[in-house]
Image (cartoon, rainbow, N blue to C red; front, top):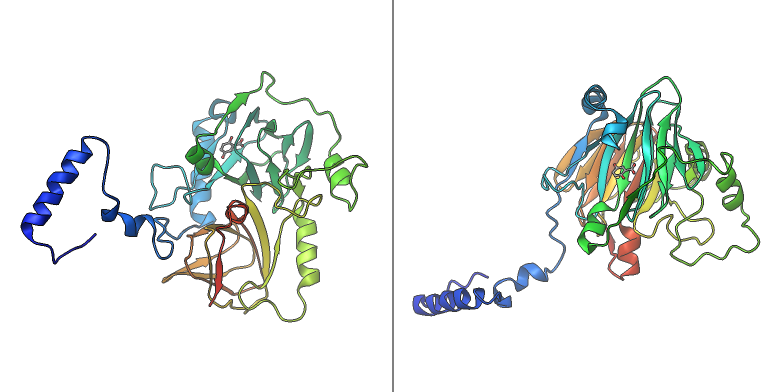
Length: 348
Ligand code: GTQ
């Protein structure tokens, strides 16, 4: 705290006191109170963008240096430029680009961290979750809830790249992380592909199924074809001035978030549409699935195209401009903040 008015002998006495209590692992609140309890969020997170055209070659190079089996997960972490060395894109979220080459397997494991995948490039890979495989197509939003066995493989003839989003920093903050490797590299499938979506995602539920409110969804793929046609079908009338046509993904059995720690969203911005300035307390990672445009984050302007990933820090003002018809996917820690009564947004 800056107190320019205090006498030098008072300042010296205080410094002497701070040194003595410091030796007893104590420190005065009044020197840090303003930073501890700020009037509004001052995030250390910086806005940033990763242009897929610039990084795809680096992702491909990783494929020449290490196998998926040796790496366990061959991922280039997208590190927030203001938080280098911390393996995070915001203070609570992790993001990375995962590559799997034809014939490769990323071996089965499970962990307390929840994960999502957003498929960006290539065809023929699958993710297996709790005994069921899903073929990964571009734009598909796939989840592996906490403590579910999961492995990935590529049965096709193209490299496949997807964006991973995990709550790794949040779980690390809570020191609540556990993980386990499976003795079997690829888990045995016990249900045919499509079973979970038919059973839990078709406006019906198994007759005795009663999920708790925060239970993760049993539907673990939200196919882009369905998301896209739904977005097109609701894109009539006047778009929301701050969000365009924006939807949240839900657990169809509860209406809650697909996972308790990570919320996911998608929005369509018609060509030429420009959103009014908007901010919220959940720092958010965006992916451009279709179209192109500009994101103005605070005083920074970023041009985005397909497969570009950008991060909007907490309480930073965002304006989006669509140069073409644009579809964005995004994810954040909003369900955590809402559960704790912390989430706020502001339409400017
Ligand atoms: O696919 O299970 O990017 O465990 C980081 C940690 C992906 C995964 C990551 C993981 C995974």
